Amino acid sequence: MGARADLQARERAAVADVVASTLRHDLRNKLASVRNASFYLMRKMQKTDAWGADARVEAFFQLIDKELAAAEEVLTRRAPVSSSDRPLCHASEAAERGLAEARVPEHVRVVRELKARDTVPLDVEDLALLVRCLVDNAVEAMPRGGMLTLRTWDVEEGEGGVGIRVEDSGEGLTAEAYSRAFEPFYSTRPGHAGLGLNIVQRLVLRQGGKVTLDGGPSGGTHVEVIFPHRPEARGRTRLGQEEIRGSK
Image 1 (cartoon, rainbow, N blue to C red):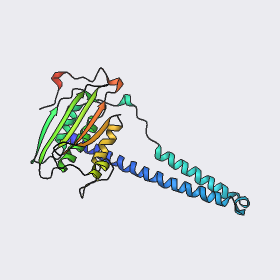
Image 2 (image 1 turned 45 degrees about the vertical axis):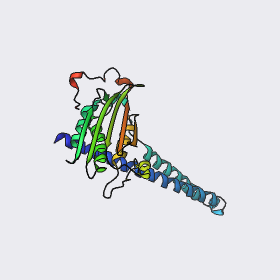
Image 3 (image 1 turned 90 degrees about the horizontal axis):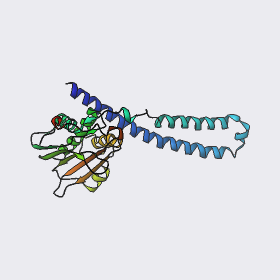
Image 4 (image 1 turned 120 degrees about the horizontal axis):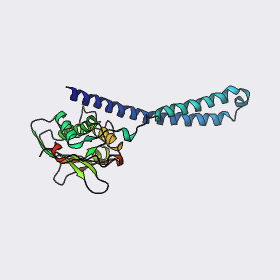
């Protein structure tokens, strides 16, 4: 129960983060509209007798500008995140945990190819949540059943890292769905919040990784995530072969 509760808590926090970010974006746009309107009215008032006759008019416009700046500062303020304080988790172990917490019906066959030995700079709960979001999304694409494949591997090229990929054998997505898949609250299925892929994208980008969505040559969809090595984590990311938890 403890692991499930931790994952549910992370999910609630991730959803709250998406909602807050969306609200911040909308509020910034509204504040910009207020600022433009205030500037227009100020220019008009400067041409009237009221501007010089009553000192409070200019003072009020200055107050509006000051309060708008303070509101924008509150919206953009974020708690500092130190990458050196970020924990490391075993990619394959967290992937297995996320899969176990997902809602996979009996008519969906699961194939595991968990070969990653490296670690990822995320809490195990965060990475498990990421995998669970991808698995849930893949399952929803196969209402009549199919095959779900979960892969993890060590990235050898470049600076290295860890790759995670979830594939489904569903009918694929429309062109619009591909272009909007990572938008918060976008979903092609009634009753679904449309937050899963956005949560995945946020978790990945915060660690300097990348996430891609594409279709397979024979149908279906796959989402691939690449976490690059964190510089200070090099030299302590490899696990001994006896610790590998992945299964075929």
